Image (cartoon, rainbow, N blue to C red; front, side):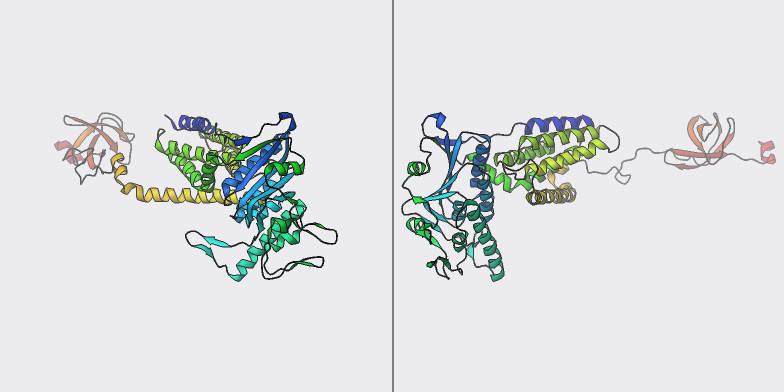
Length: 484
């Protein structure tokens, strides 16, 4: 297979492998009121806050943007907290939902769970449930919670407090109540009533959160205590709707690891294809490279980040690069193909809220650009290591001939006849400078050493250089000529 046809085959195989990423199958639990009444989407926020929960919230937000029969979204919360970065991204997705958003605290909404509840338009709590204590802590793998340096702690606490205030303000809650869940050194008073003294974090039971305070009494945080989801729907006026609860799928749990290791699968994909293009035929490196790209795109697609438009850019860029390989030089197809391929990969790693445009904001591009840079550096390092270490491995020695065919090893491609230097003969063709001369019974291919020699001229072999036999005219004086 020629290099050009190999590139075209690579592009076609890439399109076939990447062309049909698996859609996550939504696991739902639905009640049975009339379909015409619409739906209430229940999104569970249960257990530690981690990326798989982000994917289900993202899936729910996109379903709300695409469907017109969803009348409300309920976030069923029972969590001790979790990752702050994931929480911020979940809140961003919640804000993009345009239908009424309700939070129902089933048992506890601590830390990140409290911040997520603040992003809902109204908060309801089950009897005996609690909410609050959103102070961020540092947890190291295998080491557990750690004490943060004072300057780092203030920086993180300040950012978390701002996130809590912003979530509360946009959802219509008291931002001071939200900040008091994050800052222990803050005193919270509403009117003349002290809600929280300085020195402890704000944590509220269902009764405390629903207590009315202020000169014009309003609930401190909760809109009421309800024993179950059906009661909540009656309180909010959507009890006639069909309840549909989303579940985290096994594909979304797997996509969590794929997305977090996206740079590694990207390195495998780019490195495998690069090695394949530098070697004859199509074999293991190309297959591994395509598999790495397929896993990369599948994980980001299931995570709700990559769309089919990103896949189209990747495939089109690959095809243009294949076309460029069939042409001499490097021109417009190569430049455009490279731009489309890199653009498709970056966009496939970039979050785009449902309410936003197709192009992401600059701050959302920082993370995918960093992953792409890491993959590029890793590819260069992998190539360097392969060039240094691969020749020393046993499989490489089985595939590649490493023995040299040197003269000292007994390998001689040509051994000129001995005793040629000094032999005299006559040219039987013009030497311009190559030609043929007769030396006794031998006809030899010779080269004139520095000048044109016509046919019939006596010549002498002056030296032999491998295959080259150099001659010059045989010069005789008159005495020698008469005696001969």
